[in-house]
Length: 205
Image (tube, rainbow, N blue to C red; front, side, top):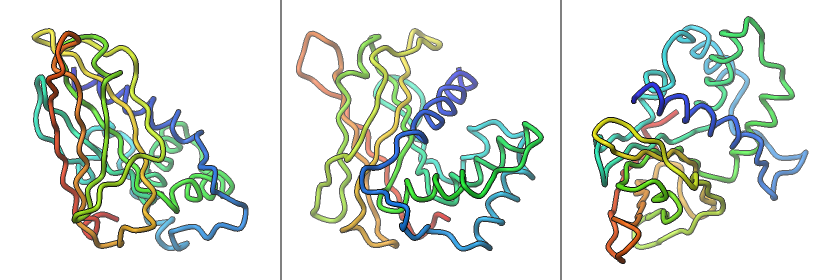
């Protein structure tokens, strides 16, 4: 089950990397220095044999397995580049500067999360809603994707892995934020599960 979630995570990340933000321009200043980019690439290459789940553990908040639970990984610019380094090392290649810059420009104005949720029926992903709480402020997604159909794991628990982006213009770099995900308990009622994932942005590269 965990391996399947990791594969889904990787697929979603690759698809998501192709979704360039509308506000991105050629003149956008990238959010990492050359030294930080090198550090991220080296980290990815050094740990290329780790699973996605293992590699992203330090960026992940996990509230458990089972219906109404899940895990969320904050995809920082540093982690995005590290993942590029990981995949390049596995393929025996070196990431080119153009690809790295394109990926970083996508992230400069957003806070990005990859989310795995566990529900009770195959289409629960269609009901998922996200908000990002920062103090008293509630921020709606700038972009989100959740699959229309989930995958079945052990004990018939359904899992769905997707991504969500929020504009970070009002969120300080060292803020504490809470990603809130709600989704239907079953398709016949209005009852919802609520998952809360707390992140202290100052702790993540």
